[in-house]
Image 1 (tube, rainbow, N blue to C red):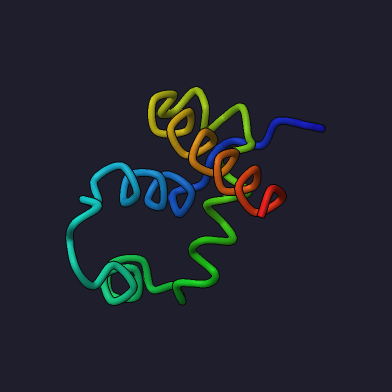
Image 2: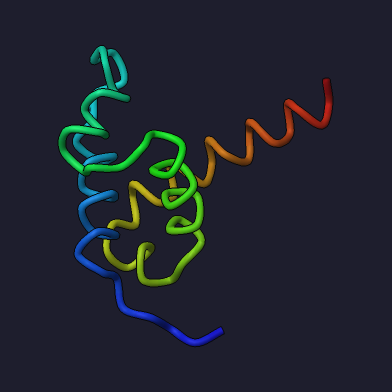
Length: 80
């Protein structure tokens, strides 16, 4: 798979996710206001992004954390 550089939108999504506090309310409204994306589209893009080497290079701690969270969710769904 060829490496494609991160776009400004890709970096904005990663930066938003890195800065977002888990306990902060209204994440969906902030996604719409700050990124001009529907929340469903935001999460689709985020899931794809965290599987790229470019995102891993850009923010390895965030990408590692999000991959671990995804893996836990997948395992719990398949076990339940």
